Image 1 (cartoon, rainbow, N blue to C red):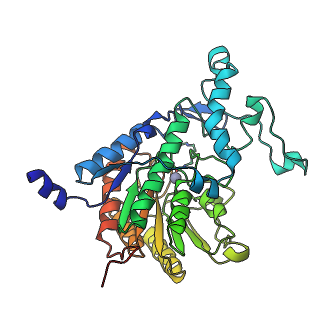
Image 2 (spheres, rainbow, N blue to C red; image 1 turned 135 degrees about the vertical axis):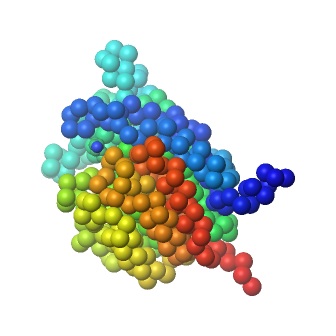
Image 3 (cartoon, rainbow, N blue to C red; image 1 turned 60 degrees about the vertical axis):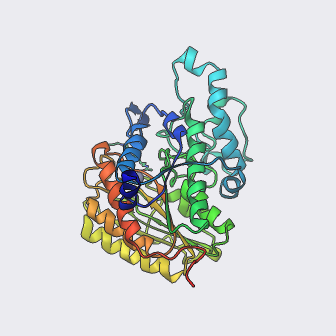
Length: 372
Ligand code: SP5
Ligand code: ZN
C-alpha cells in the first residue's frame, strides 16, 4: 500500500508508451552529404520513460488503432510507402549487395523538376525513395515502420484518454512527427503524431482544437496539414528559420493560414540565443491567440530541444521555463501532450518531468465536463 500512496503523491499524468518505438534505429542522418551519427536515437525514449516512471507517472501501453484517422491527415500513398519501402529496398539487395543499410533517397521530384509533368511512381525503389520524402536526414531501416505506427497508436491512445474525460495525457511518441506534411516526411519524422491526435479529438467530438508547438523547430508539417482549416488552430514558437535553422522554408511570421484557415495559424520565430524571458513571452502571446479561437481541446507538441544544453538548437530555455510554458498551455483546456524532439540525453528526463509537472498544475476543465 506504500506503493499506492507513493503513486498518488507522484506525477498524475498517464504516459502512453509503445515498446515498438525502440525498433526504429535510423543509424544516423545524412547531413550536407555526410552520414553523421544522428541524435534521434532509441535511448531518448528510454530516458523519457524511466524519468517519468521514477516521478510516479503511470505507464499506459498504447492500444492498436485502425488507419482511419491516419488516412484523414495523411495521403494513403505516404502510409503505404512507409509501410513497404524497407522490404522493397531489402529485396533489391541494397543492404546485402551494396552496403546501403538504410533507405536514403537521392532524387526528389520537386515542382521545379517536374514543371507540370504528371506525377509518376517510379518502379525502381531507389527512384521511388524520394517520392514522399523531402530531406536526406530521415532514414528508414528494418524496424522503422513498427515504431512509426506505434508512435501514432500512442498519440491515438492519449487522444482517446482525453476524449474520454481525462484532463491530461502524454504520448511518448518516437519517432517524432511535427515535420510531416500530408504527403511528405522529413526532419527525423515519418507520420504526424500531433496532427493525428488533433484529428482524433475532432472525431471524438471536439469542435475546435488548438495545436501549440514548443519544439525548438517550426512544425511545418502540422502547419500545412491544417493550413486551410478553421477547426484546428496551429501556433508555434521556434528558432527563426530565416536565421539558418531547419526547416528553412517555413515557420515565418507572415504565414497566417489560407482560405477558411486564414488567421488560424500563428508563427513566432525567435532569434538564436533566446532564453526563458523571450520564449515565455512568445508562449503567452501564442496562448492568447489560441484562446481567441475558443478551443475545446489542446494538443501540445512538446519538443524539449529548446533547452539550453540541446545539441540541435540555439535556444536557451530552462527546465523551469518548460514547466511554466506547459502550465500555461494546459490551462487552455484538456490537453494531449505529444513528444516531439529533444536530444540531450542527460537533460531530457528532468525536462520532461518539469514540463508534465507544469501541465498537471494547470486547472484544466475536462473534455466531457463532469462539473455539476
Ligand atoms: C523533431 C525535430 O526536432 N526534428 C529536428 C530536425 C532538425 N534536424 C536538423 C539536423 C541538422 C544536423 N544536425 C547537426 C547537429 C550539429 N550540432
Ligand atoms: Zn525540434
